[in-house]
Length: 370
Ligand code: PEP
Ligand code: MN
Image 1 (cartoon, protein in one colour):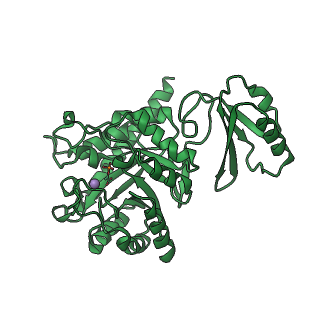
Image 2 (cartoon, rainbow, N blue to C red; image 1 turned 90 degrees about the vertical axis):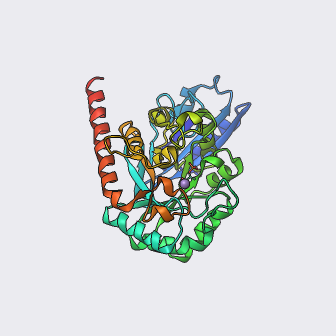
Image 3 (cartoon, helix red, strand yellow; image 1 turned 180 degrees about the vertical axis):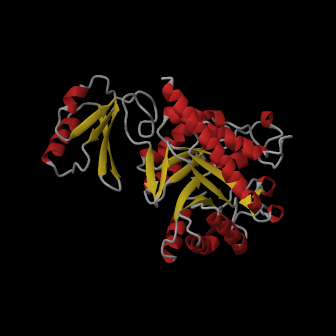
């Protein structure tokens, strides 16, 4: 059960204390309070954990500080979409809105290799009107002998260049909680010219200690990749780990499932789950067509499979696209085979726009038939 207090209800209000005394007296019910600091107001939600079936919702609703009580109808208490649950399904970060009702494209380098490539990438994004990107500094690689990313050494120039080209949010994978501190420190040193969305990769979806660390901090939102070999439910529970620790600014990313049945693609594209995640949870849903498809093949219509997979996700209502580009894919140190070229950026963005327009037209059609 979730008790939602009136906005700006303070824990020094006598009404608040009255409610807490009442809840503390409930037997076998654990209480967990979540404070959500918003731009305009602060929200407090109180989670009652245990056998809540015997509790009287109306009695709780009668407390002055209580705005509403929601019965948890499914798992995923914090991020889930429950019956009669009208809590927001968006958040704002560094001036960018992440919601189930809009779309942001994060085109960029899979891995930062040279400063020059970072600058070419960011300039192309600025020229195409983009304010978000992806830049990998810490790369989890299958082979210990492969390039592992420049790590902390590249952060300051990546952030400075991002500021120079008007980038507001960079999706950046972390593999260890120490890297959150490194990112924070580099942002402080450079005067916070940009924002960072921490990315937790598919190899770490169930790295519970990493999830807890990323969940305990509220500075950065988190992009959680679906685990490539676990059920959707298991991956959604991983997202709930972040939220249960206090950070509910989470975007969930579909990136394809590891199975030979996806061949010749790198993974089996799973973007049919875009509406499923939106139905089960209030998280914005991202798609990663690059790591799903993994190669630059095209059909007889000359549309690259990566464009096709993107369109499939966007036409189904995806809210974010994470996609690999590179100024010289042949020289990329990571995932060059799936990187799109900078001269394809405008074409790609236009293709995304067409797919999004189709999705919006489909929503209007659905609304007029319901
Ligand atoms: C990535 O986005 O760079 C990446 C490594 O993705 P995934 O964790 O989905 O393999
Ligand atoms: Mn990659």
